[in-house]
Picture 1 (cartoon, protein in one colour):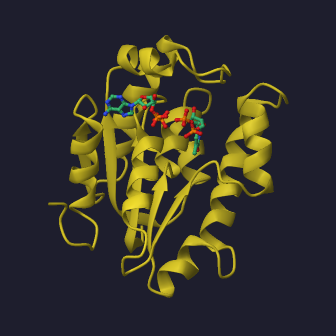
Picture 2 (spheres, rainbow, N blue to C red):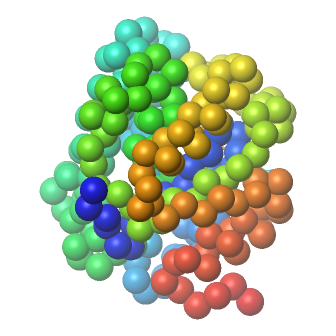
Amino acid sequence: MEKINNFFVIEGLDGSGTTTQLHRIGRRSEGLSPVLFPTFEPTDNPIGQLIRKILHKEVTVPHDTLMRLFSADRSLHLFEKNHGILDRIASGETVLSDRYLFSSVAYQSLYASLDDVLQLNHFPLPQRVFFIELSPELCASRRKTRSKEELFDETEMQRKIRDNYYRAFECFPDLDIQIIDGSASIDEITRIIWRSLPYPPIE
Ligand SMILES: Nc1ncnc2c1ncn2[C@@H]1O[C@H](COP(=O)(O)OP(=O)(O)O)[C@@H](O)[C@H]1O
Ligand SMILES: Cc1cn([C@H]2C[C@H](O)[C@@H](COP(=O)(O)OP(=O)(O)O)O2)c(=O)[nH]c1=O
């Protein structure tokens, strides 16, 4: 599978801290060169917005439909003219995404065969994936402050998703995966991710 240089991805269970890191790194990179584009999946395009309604249980669709929506959202995320990941990278930007196809492999394979999920996710691979490793129990306790319950919130389900992540990574033997201890401080995790990005180190 084709690999895209300067494209980085953060993955982890719900509550592991991926959003926190995306925001911090986005803020820290402001004004630096090359431009960093912090982004996320599900995206905020119309397909991503529909997915969020499904995740918040405002709309119900079969799991097969949800799996295809994630794939369509990702396709637009990558290939949209000018604003998509590929065009941004072609114009010299570095892209950091909170979640990518590995989330589909880990979450959607709860309800579909691994082969089916992989087939719908035949997309280019990032330069590196940061996997924030934190136990499902600690993730659950970090999610407690959230007001809205989501589709994949149950701790037992998160346990399976964690196993699925490791199975997902085995499907991509050439993938560069950095496993990060999610119980480290927020600052320390930012520092670890930052080291792979094309900027001077944090003092
Ligand atoms: N390294 C960390 N140590 C302690 N708390 C953290 C850490 N990273 C994130 N948190 C807290 O855990 C909660 C979930 O983090 P968040 O980034 O929203 O998770 P995710 O996007 O992976 O679901 C937030 O309240 C956040 O402040
Ligand atoms: C990108 C993606 C996310 N998801 C799930 C993971 C999360 O439970 C949910 C939304 O992701 P996200 O908004 O990142 O949630 P959080 O900030 O709580 O981690 O969607 C999938 O099931 N498949 C996918 O392909």
